[in-house]
Image (cartoon, rainbow, N blue to C red; front, top):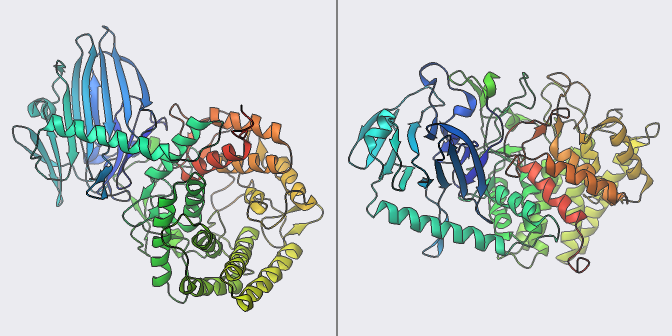
Length: 595
C-alpha cells in the first residue's frame, strides 16, 4: 500500500519521489508541472495498470536502509536480501555550476553497485505518458532504450544489458551499473565517467550551498533538510515556487479534498522565500521577485490571482483524469487548479511583503527603486479597495465567500509596508498616505473581527468561527505578542482547534464536510505563538513532537491524522517545511548561550 514515506530528489527543474526501496513512483517531465511519466503513486488504470514506475528490484528482498548523503539532495538506498546480498542505489538529479551558470539538465541518474554477497537484481522501467493513458513503444540499441509515445520520447542510456531491462530478466550484479534517463539525446562521453562526474559535482554543489546557510544552533540537520526540500520545490528558470511536487494526494482518506499543488501560490511562495532568506539563501528570493515583477507587469487593472503557473501562466483550467485511480484508489485525480479564478485578497499583502525585502536588504543584487515603489503603489490601491470585501479566503473555500480577517490583515500589511518603503525612500507625503490607509484599515479590523465573548479574533467579520491563521497576527506585525487580545486568541485556538498534539485549520464544515486531519503548518504557527507569549517550554516540547511526526527522511506533507500519525495531503508540502524552519529559529538557544 502506498504511503508518504518518500524521498525527494531534484535540481530546481525536475523532481522525483522514491519509496523506501528507491522505487521511483512519481516524476514529472520536462518540468515540475509536466506529465508524470512515473505516476504509480496515483495508481494508473486501464492500459497503464502495472506501469508508471522505475525500480531496481532485489530478488529475495527483505528490508532496506535509506538516507541522504550529508547536506545534499543525493539519496542512497541499501537493499538487503535473505542470502546476505546487499545492493546500494545512489539516485540524484544533476545540478552544479558550469560556464558561469547553473547546469540543471532534465535527467535522472541511478548508480547501482554490489556491496556484499551475490545479489540478483531485476530492472523494471515502465514509464507512461499523458497522465497514465499511454504505454510507450520501445526501440533500443547497444547501450540505450528509447520509450516513445504521443510525440514524447524518453531515452535510457545504460551499461546494463538493454535486453535484461526490456525483458525484466533477473541477473547477477557483479559490476556497478549506471543509468541516465532523460530526453532523447545521445551521450557522447563515457557513461560511467559522466555519471561519476555528475555525482561529484552535484554533491559538491549541494554541500557548498548548505555551507553558506545561516542556521540556528539547535536542530541544525532538521533545518538543513527542510531548506534543501524548499529549494527543490523552486522552479529556477522563472523563480516560481510550487506548493508541492504532487497532485491529488487527499487531505484525508476517502474525501474529495484532492488538489493539484504543482503551481505557485503567491502567499505560500512568500512564506518559502522568507524562510530561505532567513537562512541566508537570498538567491531564491531574488528569483521569486523577478517572477513577481512579471506577474505585476502582466496584471490587468492591478488584479492579482492567488495562484499562477510556474511559467506565469494565468489560466490553470482544472480537469479530472480518468486514467489514474488516485492515491490508494482515492480519486479524483485533478490537473490544474480552479483557485486561479478565485478572489483571495490576501495576495496583495503577500506580494508587498516579498517586494519590501528589495528596499531593505542590502545583500540583494537588484535593490528596490523609485519606479518599483510606484508600481507597487498600484498593488496597494487594490488592497485599499478590497480589504473589506468578501473573498474565498486563505483556505480557498469554493462554496462561500466572507470578509476573512486574514485577508483584511494582509491588505493592512500591504499598506503598512508601503508606508515603511515610502519613508525609507524619503517620500514623506506617500508615507503619510499609506500610514493613514493602514491605520484606517486596522481600526475596521479591530472593530469587526473581535469577539468579546470568546475573547479572541475570529475568522471573518461578524463571525464566530476560529481559524488557526489568526496565530500569525503577531508575526505580521498587526498586534503585539503581549497584547491581551493576541493572548486571548492563542488561548481560544488552543481550546477549539488543538486536538492532541496537532492543530486544525478550522473545525467547522466547509464545501466537503468537516475537516478530518490537522494541518501541519498550523501546529508550527501555534508553537511560534506559544513562544511569543512566553510559554517557551511548552513550545519546545511540542516542536520535538512535530519533528517526531516527520517521515524517516525528515519530510512532511500537508496534513496529519491526529490519532494514527499518518501523513496525508500533497507532498512534500512547502508550508510544513517553512513552519519547521521558523519554529527552530524562534526556539533555538543562541550560539553564544550554547557554550
